[in-house]
Image (tube, rainbow, N blue to C red; front, side, top):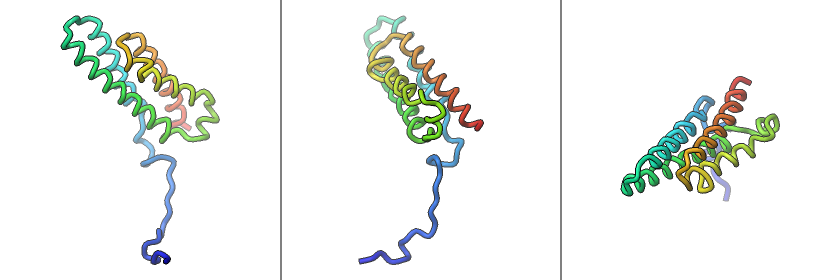
Length: 134
């Protein structure tokens, strides 16, 4: 049985991202990564077990948000042409998401891991803004 013509699309649209450009920004990942770093610093400066438990919980939530925002940029904003022009971009995202994850800031409380994550986000941000100018 064939679908009636009324159910068939009349117009096909395409876009290079989910919404018109302008909705993506690596600043979202950076804000969450800054929170992760601040929590790591506060954790190191406080010996209260209840405080430390809450700090770890919040830090892990913020680290998940960093990964989420990076994944959105990686999968929704950047396109094949970007990866051709910046061949190290996939590796950069991979390293950044790992630094946000259990192998990095999420899995530990060392502020230096958060600094490494922030450096990777800065590299991604630089490329992002170069692509926005193009």
